[in-house]
Structures are given as structure tokens and as C-alpha cells.
Image (cartoon, helix red, strand yellow):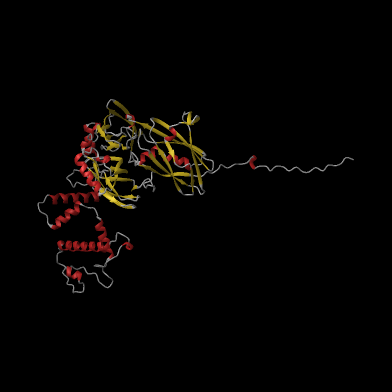
Length: 616
């Protein structure tokens, strides 16, 4: 008999659902560049922010892509300039620790050379000068969740030409980033002098001529004189001959009227025998378009960036012939007392920017509030990215000051800003100014109708369409007075009050002598703004119990004297036929305002109570 072999059941492999396994895509850790600090920059910070395309880099770092490449272009610098130190503040957006490893990849064609390293000893070593162009201090970064860590990059400018240096950034979850640093080092290139790549978009429906700048940069150490010209019909150059100081940025003033939604303006730059042709993008829009940027307004605290202005960008929207003020805070993170000097920015016939105080001293770890006053003259302007300079100086001792005064009598100093020993560095503040026109309801004729736009700013409004049509558009034709020839439109209540106010101003201004009441009426008609003192007065009066009618007191429609108001216990005599004296009422109100203001001044506290002793 054949032996029966017992067969064991074979285990079958478990079947995957849907015919196969599903491997979910991994979720990588997210990062972002939270802020950027440029130590002693040559231009405004926003140019570096845009040149590095930080917004595009953040989109790649926050995405779930395993690999990406990004190019960070450093703005053009002159050969043998001072090294430029940049700090990228990286934030870890994930809930786990992130570890970054940074190393340089060689993408140049430098080869090893046999180099003598000792007596009769030779080795093949790299003599690559490119590796010294970009230096990254940290090779490994450990970032905790929601922590901000500084990545310091220093650029050196000692080799002519354009260079591309690549660094590989590898994370602990196997993500790989390739960051290409592009350097452009030149002596002077007339084709790289304009910082403005696109004009400010203009409203096609606006027929006024608005002046805006094309920013011209001089990277050299000497003053340069340029000549500009343009054949564009809608582009008018106001200062065709421009001298730009050394290592400065200066505005080329232009009036531009867009002819279409997408335009391209051409500007020809001439310097000595060299010429360069620039094509600048110009757009027409149907409404006001504001500049959008994600650049932070506050600087990160840094050991290399000791003098900070907060905010680093301020905007002014202002009417013609008007003054506006804003406050900025200057903070000294250093240990020593420094002297700060604002540089006033004045362009004749356009606007002026002055500061209060213009010169001040600041101790270490102290702050100072500075007032910026912008005055716009008779021309419409729209300026963006005005570089306001705050100089930082050492505080010299008396012996040094006496020696400098003695030397100044002997020597003639051409440029004391750069040659005096007290100068350390300068800090930039970005300023934007936009002149807005008043609407029909808000416009006034306080100065006899002088609120019209100055025609010397450019061509007459709509003159490019011909004299007849332009005049018709400005002055208004009788056919446009009503709809379908129904006659003039009925004035609204606001227009009627505005007409009465103008008539009152004209009538009182024509008199030789004014009474006290007429002076008050004229001042109230001219200046309708409510000041902070009026607001505080009415707030104080509403909270007080002065002349408040309580429940026990009956309301009687009687005329009282001042003494009867102050002493309500006295008998009241009804005199309905007595006429009201306006001077007496205005005197009472003036005295009440004075007393209320004095009480507010006594009770108003500007500092916390724990820092002072109240003497009552």
C-alpha cells in the first residue's frame, strides 16, 4: 500500500482591494521666508524683496513639492564695493522640528591646479575665485516649530561679470531645494541705470496730467550727468538733463497719459558718448490701482541692524496745497548714544518732505517719535518708493569738535557728508505720495477758485484731442446740463448749503471791518474741520453734570441771565419778550471751552501712573 501523504493547505496572500495598494503622497514640512534684512543697503529694501522674488520662493517652500529651484538675483553693484550682508529669516510652519543642510554645488569650469604646499610637495587643489563671491555662514539649521531662524548670506564684489552660484538645501524629510544666487558686478553700465521697469498705472478716464518718477541709480563713486529724451506722444520729460549724485537714486520726472490699456514707453539715455534705450511698461486702468506687496513693515531685531525705523514704509494721500503729517518711530538697538539726522526731500513746485526734529540724539535701547510733514504744491503728483535717508553719526567729544573747527578753517571739505569722521551709515525709509483731487461736493473756493489744476504741469487737459473738444469737456456744454433738454438739474441739500456758505464767505470777505460775531461766522465757514480739542470738549461736557436737568427740576422755556444759570436757587422771572444777546452766548461758550480744556490738561495722562508721582 502506498503511504498516503497528508497535504497541508497553502496559505494564500491577502488580496489588496481594487486590485492593488494605494500609496498616499507624503506630506512634507512647510517653510517660509518671514522677513528680509539687508545690512547697509544701496537702495530700498523693496527692490531686494522683488529681485529675490520672495513671494515666489514662499509659494515653493509652502507647497508639497519635493524638489524646486529658485533664482535670487542680487541687484547690480560696482566692482570692489563693500560686501553686502543679507539675512533671510526662515520660519518653520510645521509641527515638527526641521533640519536644513546647506552645501555649495560647483557649476563653474574651474579645474584643479598643481599647487606647491611644502618643500618638494605638490597637490592638486582648487583655485576657484567664484566660491568666495557668496558666503553662507550656517551649514546646518535646526528650526523648532513656529520658530524664526536667521540664514546669513554675504555677497562679495571683486570679480567682473555675471555669476551664478548654486547652493543645495536638503531637509530631514528628503526635500531638495536648489537656490541659485545671481551676481552682476560692473564698473558702469548705461543700460543698467534705471530702477523703474513699469510706470504707475494711470486712470484712462482722468484727463489731468499727473507727474510720476522714473528712478535713476548711480552706483559709482562720482557724480554723473545724464540726458534723456523720448519720442512717445503721451510721455513728457520734465527734467531732461539730470545730475545724479554718487551712490544715490534720483527721480526723472515724467508726465504720462496712456493711450491704451497696454503700452510701452521708450526712453533714450545719453551719457557722454554712450547711449542706452529703455522700454518701460505702462498700463492704463479704469480705477485707482494700489501697489500690493507682502514685504513686512517691521524689521526683525538683528545684531547687525541696530538702527530701525518703524514702519519702514508710509503712504500719504493728500490734496493740492495741503499739509499732512505722520509719525514714525526710530529705535536704537545699540549700546552707545548716537546722533540721527534726517535729510529733507524737496522738489520745487511739486512737494516737500521735512522732519521734526531734524536732528536728535538717541541713547542705547531708546526710541524717538519723529513727525514727517509732507506739503504738496500746485501740481498733481504720484510718487512711489521715495528713498528718505536717516543718517547715523557718532557723538564726537569736545576735543574732536574743536580740532575739526580748526581744520575746517584750513581745508575746504567738498563733501562733508562722506568725509567727516562722525558719519557711520544711513537707514532708508520708503515714502509714497499720491495727490488726490476733490470731488464736486468736497471742493471749495476759499482762495477765489484757485483749486484748479496748474496747467504748467503739462499740456492743457484734453488738449491732445483738439482745442474745441477739450474746451467743451472742461467747461461743460449747455446740452449736458440736463437729461434730454429738461433744463438745469435741481440742486441737492448739500449743494444748497455749500452755495450759502460760499456766499457768506464772499460777503464777509468784502467788508473792511468785521464785528466779533462776523469774525466767528467767517472762521466757522472757512474751516469746517472738527479739531481734537472740540471733540474732547464735547466729550467732557457730555460726561459732566453742568446745566443738566434732573428729575426734580421742571423745564421752563424762559430766558435766564448768566447769574441765574450759575445760581439756580434764585427766583426766576419770566421775560418772554427779551431778545437773546449772541455775544453773551458766545462769551459763555468760550469760557466753558477754556475751563474744559484746562480741566482736560490737568487730568490727561500721557505716561503710565507707576512712572511718576502725582502732586495734587
